[in-house]
Length: 485
Image: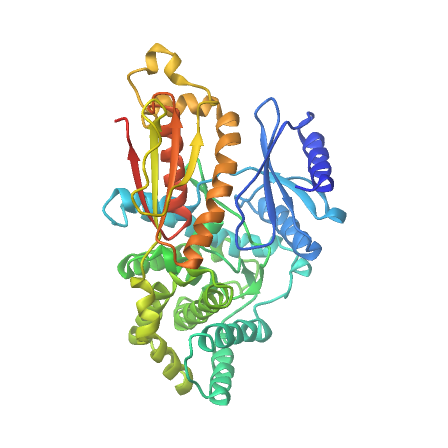
């Protein structure tokens, strides 16, 4: 963090909490250029400091945050802002995303989409109906950036993104004029749907936080006016979430019922009635344009920027697109678009991306009494992190027979959250650099070791937390081994 950003966020934290912070941790980077810092003081209160050079984007986020909170939506409270310097302070919602919950529950249940997950998704969808109704009434649409509506111009940007960054870079042959003609027909059809509600724009599992079992929402700064169908399509056809089609259908039916109730309860004029048939008639066209937008992003990040982990989403997106083409054909004549979409869903080159070798990340705990584990992959090691500076539950009799996987020990470390976070946050930043670069360059193995005196408490806990974090954030193969038990 530069001194200037540090000073501004320090002052904002002091104005909010009444004390000076004593700990900053920069969070691992996301897909945007925004920088996030977890900031805390002696009393343990935390906040998230944000730096973003794009003032208009900041203004949109802050305005929408206040409007959505006013409408009763779970979004972070804004504690302070200094827009002249691109900085603001917001509520800390923790680290568990809906995607993390989804990944962990499916891993622990043999890949099944559990009833618990369905209930979580239903609570998310019910909250979406509030965003789209009461949120629409509260939002100041003059703050939208970079576009006030998901209109023809916005749609064309997305469709061209798909054409130039996915079709071109994956060497799909197309007739550009014929495809452009079909794009215009598709946009005409999409704009037949009512499109004056608040459209979140990127309503997907990584932008939904789970706090005490309830969904909270982030990253809506690209919101604008648009159709109801787009955001529910974004959530249910989120590629890496890989929701089974039967579950998608059940969740869509639940959403439509809840949406009808929400619109009728918030209606201020006869215009605000819900036409279920009209919604359903345009729904899959919005699914299609959302998938195309996402594939443009996968192509840009994966083919152009050479970030291979973005390519891992392509097979899921192709399966979703194939399902739409086969089961929900558009009621408009767009032959070149359909020919192109069919060709990419049957492309052996694109489908083979799923079978490429994943990076294998081996995470281990060990005791320094017995030495650092040997790397048998032939790569000559990786990372070794010494946990012996952390608070040690092994000094207390009641923890001696337990390990870092036991709830009592986990609760012990929760009581020393600041120290553990001070240690693990930079570990994650360092590991993230290597994982992303290894995936990009096609490397096959990375070893990460955590050591402590007995290899029982601190190292085990750190290894568990790191393995879980990697699994939730990267499409890699993670193995976990505790050498002392």
